[in-house]
Amino acid sequence: MIVMPRLETRTIMSTEFLLNFTPQEVRVAIVEQGIVQELHVERPASRGIVGNIYLGRVVRVLPGMQSAFIDIGLERTAFLHVADIWSERQNSDAVRPIEKILIEGQSTMVQVLKDPIGTKGARLSTQISLAGRLLVFLPQDKHIGISQRIGDESDREQLRERLGRLVPEEHSGGFIVRTMAENATDEELTADIAYLHKLWGEVLHASGDVEAPRILHEDLDLAQRILRDLVNDDTIRVRIDSQENFTKLQDFAAEYTPKVLPLLELYTSDRPLFELYNVEMEVQKALARRVDLKSGGYLIIDQTEALTTVDVNTGGFVGARSFDDTIFKTNLEAAQAIARQLRLRNLGGIIIIDFIDMDSTEHQEMVLEEFRKALSHDRTKISLNGFSSLGLVEMTRKRTRESLAHLLCELCPTCNGRGEIKTARTVAYEVFREVLREARQFNAREFRVLANPEVINLFLDEENQSLAMLSDFISKKISLHAEASYTQEQFDIVLL
Image: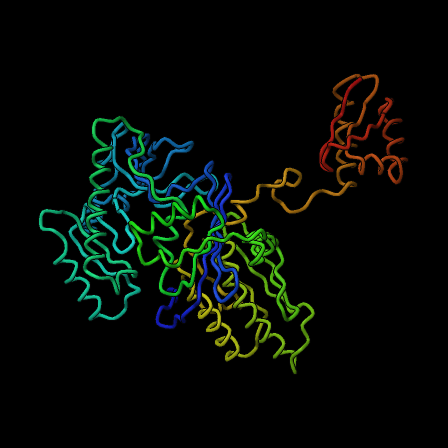
């Protein structure tokens, strides 16, 4: 198994951030080399809560699962596992059972690790961390850690020594040095240290003499997090289409991220910013099941509760010298497209990819290497396996927030997420059975069938004789009424 991304093969990318503001939502598109790679959406009515700190109340302790449900004031209780209780993680050889740590009704400070997803509540931790641009502050720890993305050991040690000198002796807590800090000055690091200690003081003050559940600290909004966390040396500009928010982000950058300030650019053209970069069209494509490849091949992407499957097909591609070459070139193009779609759709969890079968082991390795290279640009933690005995590639991508489809769409009320509906004939035969069942139970004068026009038309045409036979069999009149508002699977039997 290979853990991604492989940072040593990372290539320099010219990146643009497009920030689109409306009163209803904020959207951020990340464009690399002129191609839309990611889309982040935040709506005030459903804003994410990762990073928020709460004073929670223990609702229920589950010894069998070694977990607890915590009320933090949301619609669903949040989930805390014993492994995420900080005091118990310091000595993994002597972890106490959760029922010895928490009791029902107890108040405890917690931080959200994962947003609620689907029917699952938020995932919590009692290890508190506060993120700045250069550092992450760990109030309960003394350790100074260095981001794994800073690979040079001498640079890592130098940063650790510098930070040790800059942290005031009277300040408790530890730090993690972020990648952004690799070339930071002492003044920038000192400013980040002071900001984070001040922030922690505000959290402690908010937690005093209050009853749970209560929010103690809310993370930055989406636009501010983009400036703090994602804008880096590869970024060539950050385009913002709102004068009001441009000014706010200028003030934020001037105080917390001065290096970002020159990159901010106000977009004032009449043409919508997202339309200029074809983002709207890419969003529509990212919601579709089929993804067409330039060569004529295509992908079929199916997202389910348990996992996501990606099927690669040659389609109309016949451009190679032989069938093996056609398959190989289609798979190479698909590897790039799949890596992009995972980011654009924000697909997480288990992902199974069915590349077109290749007889050549060399071709398999080249496709896998191309896929690995394409995945290296993804900031999300990825584990990638090679081809299985069935010719499938298995991987996992850390699930941190709702996928694009779950965020922008809801289940179809007609098919309830199946992706298909019963035929009119199938529904007609269900109607026959239901009329027969009710005729045996109730002595009605007449049975009136209310159904979708397609079903009613079938009764009047091909199934007309069957309807007459049923009416003779139950010795009752059966009348029909078309309801245009009914879905094809919906019907009612009215007893008159």
